[in-house]
Image (tube, rainbow, N blue to C red; front, side):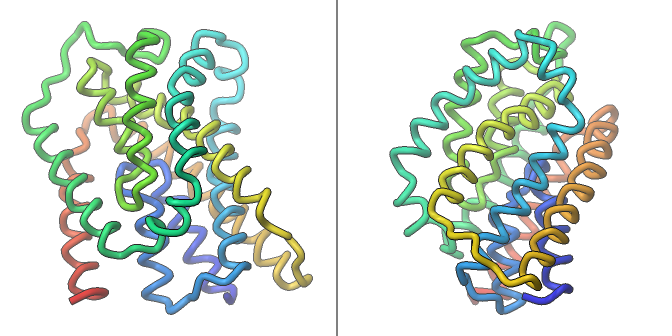
Length: 257
């Protein structure tokens, strides 16, 4: 990888991680387009840029997450089913699902169609939960259970949590914030498993690329999350559903046809 590849990859991660469009799918496709092979360094680099994106959420929500016990208790409740599925299927996910272009593109297309249908039918009501504190523990667990589908590349962890949250009577902004915070234990656990299998022995040049990638994804994710929350004040998720469908068709034509 060179500096340009690092900038592109970290930007892709930062932009797509917390939007319902699948960061894993975009990274897989970006690697294919840029002809970057899955070397040990590239795998470790992907771990580092994920950590950068996570830290943007920690930075934004540290106070709320630390001071409000109701918030983190519900986040932990939602994390439980994902932790079980991720731990039991870790090898299957790594060896079969990740890197599968067919699965990735089909998942992106299917998720986009679901988002479009949901937004065409969904009407946000006044009594819907407008904050994480208002989400019940039962609903938090169910949202976490649906997040487990995000082990399939292309599904999007954000979409897998936001869609059920809307169905269960959560307002869009609260659903997005719940998804953001749920990313912290989910992604830390996933990257922790990856780190346990990594040697992290790099040259000085590789360390510079890792540092650049970390801060690149951190800053990009920070900007995107703030923009996304403002966007949801007056917009739905319909545009993201349409984007997923178009992106899946384009990626299929470029990479597979």
